Structures are given as C-alpha cells and as structure tokens.
Length: 602
Image (cartoon, rainbow, N blue to C red; front, side, top):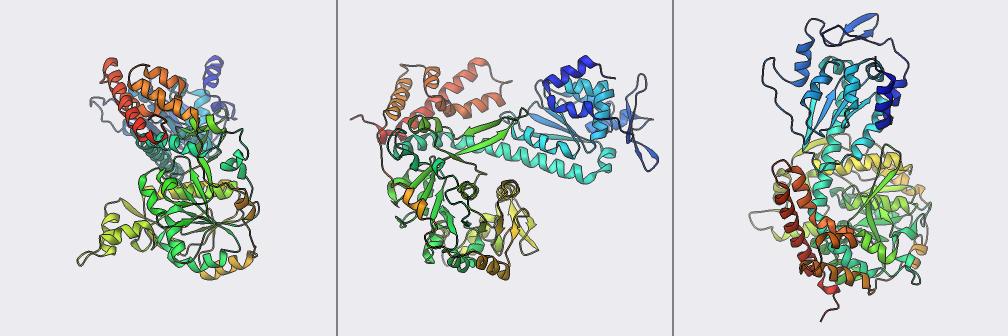
C-alpha cells in the first residue's frame, strides 16, 4: 500500500495522475504480492481468473518485456531514446526499467485499462517508485488519450533520437486495437515533432532574414490604417460566406469546371503553387496565399498579374516575391504553433524574428500551420469566418502517380528536362521512386499512393477539421480521403453542393476595400538591429549582449545548440562553447550581408 505522504508527493509534481489514485477499486483486476518475489497481476473475465504474469516464472516474463536473456549482460539504453511500455500486466518490470534508465531519460507507461492502473497506483510500491521519478509518466484508458496528446505535443525533442517500445504481450492481447492505435499515434507524433525540429533548424536563420526584410512593409502601429496590413484585423470578415481552398494536387485538373461555377458563389483562396493553373484556365481566384521562405517561391508568381488578387503572405515569405511581382493588395500574417500544457495554459510558439516585426507594428496575428501552405490556407478561411469550407485539389497523395496538377511551375521546370529519350511521366516516376511510399484510402473507395510527408499534412487536416466545428467538404474527385470531412467527390454530389450555394455578387468586396496596397516604410529599429549585429561581428559587443537586446537572434545558433545537446557527453564545456560561438558568428555574418538592402550606410 502506498502511504499518504508518498501519494501527495507524487500528485504535487504530476497532478494529472489524481484520476488513478482516486478511482474506486474494481473487481476486474487483482494484484498479488508475494514476499521476496515479483508482484503478480490477474484479470477477472467471465468468471475466470487469468494470470497476466507467470506465477511460476515471473522473471522470465520481465525479461521478455525487456527483450533480454537470462544471464546476458545488460545493455544500457541511450538517454536520447524515449522508452514506451505497452501493458502493465507485469508490474515487476517497473523496477527493472528504473535500473536501466539514464539520467533525465523519458519513460511512459501505457495500459488500455484505467482499472489496472488505479490498482497499481494505490497498492504497488513499484508503481510509486516509477511515478516518483521526474521523467516517468502514466497514461492509461481511453479517457487519458487527450492527456497523452498534450504531453507529446509539449515534449521537448531537442535530445530525442527516437523511441524504444517494450511489449507485455498478455496485456496487449486483452485490447490489441487500443495498443496498436496508441503505438502508431505515439510514433507519428514523435516523427512529426522531430521533423518540425529539423525544419526549424534548417530554416530559422532564413526566416529571421526574411522577416527583417519584410518588416519594412509594415507601418508603425500609430500610423493611420495600420491595422489593415495584418491578418489580425480580418477575423470573421467573411462570416457565413462559403470558402474554397484550392491546392495543386493532380486532381485539380478535373475540378476546373466546378471552380468556374463556384467563382460567384464562394470566396476562392488558392495556394501559390495552384495560381498559374487557375489563371491559365481563365479562373481568377479572389486571393492567393504564400508561405515558403525559399527563393523558388518566386516562380509561382513570375509573369502573373496580381493587381486584382489579394495576396496573403507570411512575414517569413521570400522577399523576392514582393520585389519582383506585379502586386496589388497584400495582407501579412505570421505562423504560430499553439500547444497546451498540463496546467491548461496555452503556449504560443511563433516564427523566430516575429518579435522584431511586432516591436515595430504591434501584434501581427497568426495562422497555425501543419507544415504546408495548404494547412495555413485552411486556417485562414476558418479565421475569416468562411462556412462551409470546400477543399479542392487537396489530394495529399500521388494520384495517378503524379505530384502536381498541370500548369504549375513545378511542371514547367520538369518540362524543360523532357527530350527524345526522357518523357515527363518518366521524370516524375523517378522522383516518386526515391520516396518511401505506402497505400492509403482513396476518395474513390480504393487505395492511392502516399508518403510520410504527405501523411503528416493529411493527419493535420483530419485533426483540424474534427476540431474546428466548421462544415468542411472534400470535393476533389481523387486523392486520399479525409474521414473528418463531408464527402462530395462524386459528380452528382459536387453538383448538388454547388447548386445549394446561392450566387453572390461582390462577395469579397468589403475585404478588398479594406486591404492595403503594398508600400515600404523606414524603421530605425531594423537599422539598429543591423548595427548591433555589425558591432558583434567586430567584437565590440559580446554575443550575450546582442541576444539580450534582440532575443530572436539567438536562433542563429540553434544548430550549434542542438548539436551540443546531442553530444554533451563527448564534448567538453570549452569545446561546446567554441562550436557555439563559431556557428553563431557565421550565421550573423550571413544575416548581415543578406539584409544589406536595408542599410542606410553609403
């Protein structure tokens, strides 16, 4: 039995565990603790008493869970691995896990039955010792899935290299579907978090550079009409007006007729990649959204007249888009990830560099992103109050072994490579074959080819559609099915849906009139930031002094910071400091040179 003092100590640090300690005892499970032996767990079902741990040889069960052999030398686990225990039917494994865990190594225990977890929390000393350890957690029963989601969403992954799963087979046989789905969910979440970390490591310096350059298009907050430049002022501006999100999936070619009918019935927002496809087919969208920080984004806008189309642009978008395109009205936003902690408070993680823009202009307003411009486009329509939302060209798959619709700049670039011996289909096929692909359910009822990255976007849409409470229709005739959306992929379903939307003249008139023309402003704060970077490069001020004044610049050393964390056992403090300083100085030098167009210096 766990003492009251120990229980209070555990709950003080992990209050979410209260449900286990306060649940009423259940007759479904029984715990038998023999002296000088491992505790045994039993499951009562249909009048039978089923042993979840071998009474004759519990040690053997524990070694099976640990995937070790009797007498073999113990292999220490890497501290960068997260340990996941599936099934608590062998409670004796918990002390053995604690012996093997490295300092600050994360371990989570999962069981399908809240009743077994409650029994162990209230009566097992092994469970108490496990929960007393700071990085060990417990998530059991269907009701705790949301808590697991919150935990994984807020988990720092800087030192996480992957997961090691331990299986207790007798427990898993009681609810195989629950364990299978939970394991897949954990693996997908960790992959997504690591992917997000790697993306940020690769692009954070570029985001800072772009935001410094693009902040010149934001007026000071005190100036007249300043609010109209950013997305924060357009919340619910299209309340009740249907919105269409047009992506550049292969099925877009089959949806052009539907889009012509929708032009006077709904607000059409296309992603930048789909813009040329629409314009080449005489379909002018009401707005286009761009997000990518890389230079090739400009190809989506070259030769395109945007003077009658609103451009929604992330502040981290590549500056060449604003310098070299025929632009009319532009509305800026930033990207933020919102996550919830165990205390119920929300955490807002913005793109590095946003602090500088908000110091000049005030709050910019953010869109949540699932990694692609289409995910930001969906959040934009939702924030502007569009209802219902129709998804078009959002295949999220290699439909008919294609990557994009015809007419995109991607297709244009591949057409240049076509010659007598090499066709377009062959070029695309080679690209697909280099990726790890797998089948997923299609809107047509069969299967369609998918890959890891597309699946990440697909899961984001599934989760967002189910949470946003806005009617969302999937109208593309092919592609991966979005189970959370209402299906209208068949011709008769699409026709019925389109006819149900009334025709509207000037449906985005209020938005168009309020949106501002693109213009430049001069901001002393940006010049001062460059000046401070120059002083740091000349070693007239220290790096910590620079970061103290402009905190977002610390992300210029993110790669070195992550490298040092992952290799801290093999690096001396002096080596780590030298690596960090060198990487930061190199990044600041590139940033200073890339933003020289902002300089007032002769």
